[in-house]
Length: 113
Image: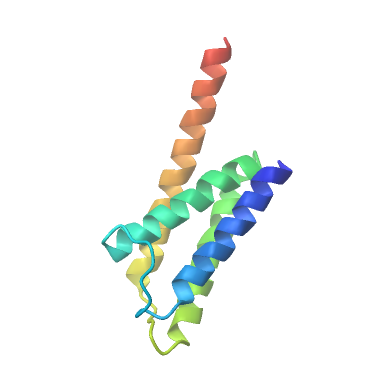
């Protein structure tokens, strides 16, 4: 679990840095802002699922709060702006990441039988 927690913390830091970098700097992208949000938060949810097994509802709520914090911080930068639709995309990504982790866990259990 410690490794998963380190991976989650590293991913959260990377997402924060990418979210606050000036928009003029080229960063990795899917080509659509909302899918960038969904993908980033899906990864966070996936990592949180393994970092804190059994606490996924609380983890997802905390990560959604983290997404809201990022939006607030973006509103304080000259190049970025906060958008409610970004927070919605974060939430969709969190659900996708959690479902993928759950399905993977169930697949691993079935393979052990």
